[in-house]
Length: 386
View 1 (cartoon, rainbow, N blue to C red):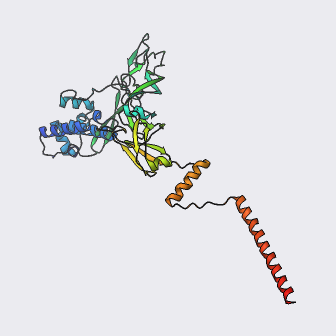
View 2 (view 1 turned 180 degrees about the vertical axis):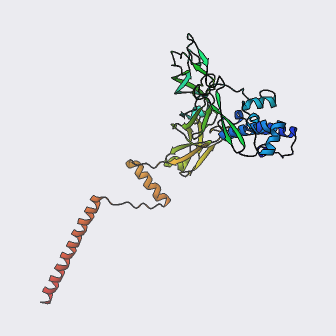
View 3 (view 1 turned 120 degrees about the vertical axis):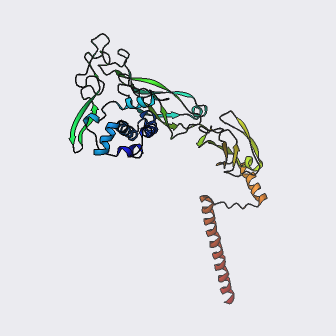
């Protein structure tokens, strides 16, 4: 077991005021209400309360200093929150009073959000199955028309039981949750007929979620109290939503920017033209300068998504995509060939199969005719010699 002085970060010569001051500082830091769900902080909080219970009492501290431990009569076995309240004079600012009952479980779900919803920070509904407080017993578990509850005979309403064990340093006292009442301190004698004594029922209902403006896919959103209902006054759990962005008809999201592809023709890119493009705020006119190249970008400032938890918006980036026509009319082909000739562009066209066949057979006929002419010339030369 760690040294009590080390737990509080004080010297062995520290007086009562220093002990109390050290405890106040650590208790505020590790209080469970300031560290929800942090098991390590909760354990540290228990340890510093145990240390303070011993070192703040002169008799207990004297025995601890002499033997390194305390006997059963000196061991603190009460509620650690009682120590906290005695030092701070009740609930500290912002802290909740300790509640009895069982807390509800946390839930997880996936939420698909549209660009419009994320941009405006809309309130959306998420339907999910969860436990809600029973509308008959209101979480009490006992039937309202029955005998109700009785004090647990094992822990006598404390919700905890003590166990003692002998060690080298003396008697060690530990506490744990009562196994009979599960720490509730009471036993239901006649369970609620609607929820069978569970105090809650499984239902499917919508949970309203306020989206932060500019939220993006990949974020996890916490909805406090959106999880399962607690039992016997216990607080509800939380709902954790994993955000996913739905595809958009026009835009692709790139962080705070929105991207849009503007398809233009060859003549429009070469000569320049104006286009009406969609934005999240309505249509807007974009000028494409003459000679624009495919891949060039036009940036519309402030037409993107709100910067999450910051001031200002991203931009809308319009990317120019030049479309090459796949089919040309005879007239369009003629004009393009004239354009190529005018600009000095060489057009090397592949011969069609039919044209290659014609050239092949045409060449063979020419070769055959030339061969026949050569034969006739040789024959005429021989006759002349004879």
